Amino acid sequence: MVVTYAVLVAAYLLSQFFRAFLAVIAPELARDIGLDPADLGLVSGAFFAAFALAQVPIGMAFDRIGPRVTVSVLMLAAVAGSALFGFAARPWHPVAGMALIGIGCAPVFMGALFVIGRTAGAARFATLSSAIVGVGSLGNIFAATPFAATVAAIGWRHAMLSVAVLTFVGAAAVALLLRDPPPPAGAAKATGNPFAMGEVLRIRELWPMIPLALTSYPILAAVRGLWIGPYFAEVHGLGPLDRGNAVMVMGFAMILGSFVYGPLDRLFGTRKWVVAAGSAVTVAALVLLALNPQVGVVGATIAFAVIGGFGMTYGVVMAHARAFLPEHVLGRGLSLMNACMIGGAGLLQPVSGALVGHFAAAGAAPAATFAILFGGFAVALTAALAVYLFARDARPARD
Image (cartoon, rainbow, N blue to C red; front, top):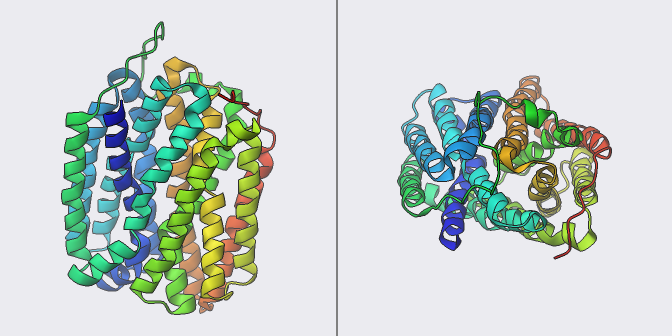
């Protein structure tokens, strides 16, 4: 399983890259293709919408045929999307390219979670899943200064075509090296309609977690994957490399947060309150940016680092949900929660793009526009956190 984990982590590096690269090239992409802020939100949102829509059939495919075939075949869509993105000439081209990339990335992290769920104890689920998020989040780093330097050297189109080649290599590695985990003894086989989620939806312990899944990671993805770049460009006048450096700080904070969150549920004997505390700190940082969007480059970079580090509750939220999932619906259950997280991002990005575009068209100053944006994120996350406080806790064994 060591080789399997390594291959999945390498594929997840690419998935994380694709979630974040747009923030670096957004101003240049908008200039060359003729995109406005609403269009940028649509481009970014296309990745997450396609990613989310693919989750339910992917979950069923994991339960039926395993992750090796599912992940390797679908990653070819990301190859095609990267190439289309590199040749984009009209506004719909990057939208279609990002949708294909979203489909290609959709099974990667879920494949890792599926393997962990089948091969490791439930008590270690948060630690291992957060570790994979942490290592895989190096893709965020590659999508910052290194990608910005590559774009400066060869242009964003050639950079994306190079990424298409790397993605093909990743798909081939999954097909050749990944090994499916054995099914659990005595587990019922997945049958019926692949879209049948009734058994999962009847698990009431999941219900209070869904609003947080729809907002926590989506806000983090919107800030890191789209708006941090335009914020530093429009409010502080930073160029591509300086933007890449600021984005990289948030990326490192996300990696650190992933590793730190991993063992906290076993250390404190609670998943619910680890997530709640981290979400509350994230709200505080968003409020700071909303009240003082011109806080300065250093202050804003620190605030984004806090959002990235404390907001990276993804692995613990998934572990919280996994604690209530029977083995025979593990693929579908994890995919449902992931669909909420990624689907929330797919909805939030075009909505936030329309909001920014509206205020920009009305002549609002960039600082005022971003103050409204970050304030809206803070309100949404606060409301979801209030619902999550009613969730039943899951207390892992301290092994």
